[in-house]
Length: 181
Image (cartoon, rainbow, N blue to C red):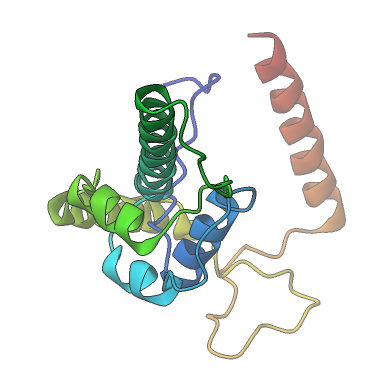
């Protein structure tokens, strides 16, 4: 198979606890969140969730807070319309805050988009890819120090200067050839 535009596969694991906490904070950075919302609990409860899954939770919580605020405004307008002569107290129109209740509502619909079986499949695939391209991981030039535990260079691995230069030239030619084919 010749290399093309989509010839690389990159395995990106699901976010760990610290990453999930940062995803919550970044999704909600411009939103007012009640101080009693426990991000540590949300972070622990969302183990196995992707960044997109966490973003969906945050969006649902935001929409729930906005919906609640709209309902309060409509109720206030309805009361004013029913009794226009009554003096209404100046109600403070507080900025809607995303509360625990909004997150609890959002968590009712939360779902993981990647199952445990999918994770095992991806991890096995990543391990297979790593093993298939790891043939040169112990390569070292003969004049350098080999790291502890590394195997000695294979016979013939230390090419002479002229042989090495020829290899580099042919590799460069092959690279140029690949660019136009």
